[in-house]
Length: 247
Image (cartoon, rainbow, N blue to C red; front, top):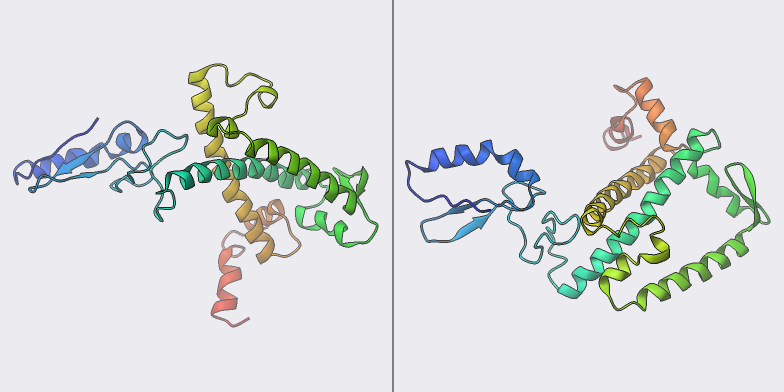
């Protein structure tokens, strides 16, 4: 639904007040858009949900899951590139959603943090452990070989699929609970997946930044340290001494 506002000085204040009063509802509605008519007859769209008042790019029509009109660098102008970016984002989101609990759960169980967990690989002949238990055949060369073959097989199967939708949502054995059987719910699940995936991507970036700022510590340890003294144990403790104090 679109709303047009003319150029009359008497109508403009009322129209703008109405527009701003309904900003919240328009922000969360993917079907509504607001446009202001100007005297030369042009219209400015306000349908990009990621920022009220930001015009939606023409190549993002809102049909894709999680499409809120966000592409400030115009990376998806070329249709072939846009489809590839959608697929790549979804794959990275799924990896991130596996990585984040893989980082948090062992640390929460007192089995060490993810920074220390990977150091076994630097010790010749060392064996990997999972949740404190040794991994059978868990030696670095064997693990690398298994991962290479498994990922190569899966990627070859995915890249051989001509249907873009099946490349992203293959179904079958990858949908054992039948989430894709109901088209309406499946559409909702797609949006939830991409939203949670983007959140997981940001979370993992945060883990990496924290590990760099506080070497040898995990995210839960960082959180506990911050909560114990939030006014002093925060990002300022890392940034200010190095940039201003010269430490």
